[in-house]
Length: 327
Image (cartoon, rainbow, N blue to C red; front, side, top):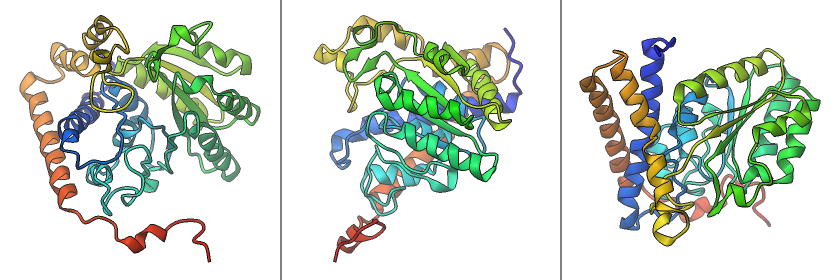
């Protein structure tokens, strides 16, 4: 099937996916040095979702993320120097070294803050959509959540409120099949998260989260609907994370999931799948895609050099930019 998207859009999607993958792989490589003191929840295997969704957003649209937030930040255009510096706890980090990898913020690009509490970002995103509705600013909010967060009461409360107020918000459930180490079938009576939209009479779709073009097209429709005053939507994107719930290791080595399951999903790699398609359809030759990767790899190496050389926050910075300093 020949893509209907422009060459520029297709290569942009590929570049974003590859940047997320190479950034995360660099974290896997460097984490054992123990210079990064924060826990890391890696996004490897899920790149198509962030890339496909955020390609439809403007710089001023909002995204709300969760503990697995690096891919979302990169797809929204985050400065990877500031992002990498945050992993190292440096003052030049996007959260000034105070947040670590789970609390990424980039206000300029619409990432107002990230909550590591499971489901904690969902009402925050509905709140930003409510603000946009009141201001009539035309901005859309996208909320990224996992299948585990879909079990939180606040998910249902937030969808109900968004539907009630017809808010410009899109809920993106990245269903990677696990909440920590618990598989979805052991937690859900029915594995149909997108079907939950029916209770609120809002659109609900379940898609292949490893197909970046399917993600792009579905998100484009939902975001367009929200921007035009059509209210909220729920998209369930089925995918798989390659690494453990937390840390750079593959947790099948600890018996947390079957190795054959991981192997099967790695065969469905969203980056390789799209790489092959771009070459097969003549969008780019292999050399062109390798060159894109080389440019990204050097950008990441520069971010590492910058981050390692950057200074740590000063002791007096502990009490700056907080709501309450005490007497």
